[in-house]
Length: 122
Ligand code: FES
Image (cartoon, rainbow, N blue to C red; front, side):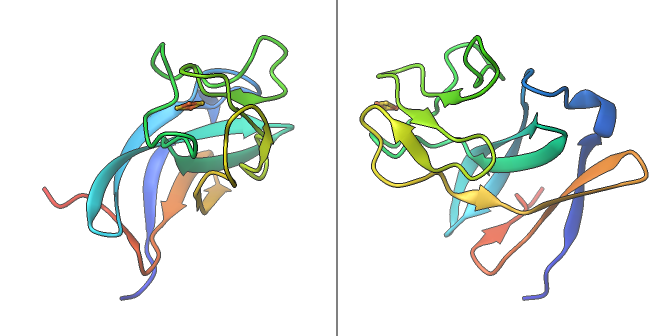
């Protein structure tokens, strides 16, 4: 399957250390929530699935950053992840979040499909 870049949101929708923009993907055949954030000027996206227990991490929708805007937190048991790589940085996580490639051009953020990552069919 060829890789596609799918429009996700406008650049201004992602504020550094601020709320995430959520979207749906099909990952390995299952529909999952995913989220995009901005950190130190760059955009990043991950599956919204904690590596401790496979649950969504935001207790309040779109809120993944801690109060310092430096770390992504799982609201359930407090796993801490690096916003730029998704790597586990503390708490009960095992390994890192699943990354989704993003690109940003002309004020538009797009996510990129992969062999195991596809858009939801409508
Ligand atoms: S489910 Fe995320 S820390 Fe336990």
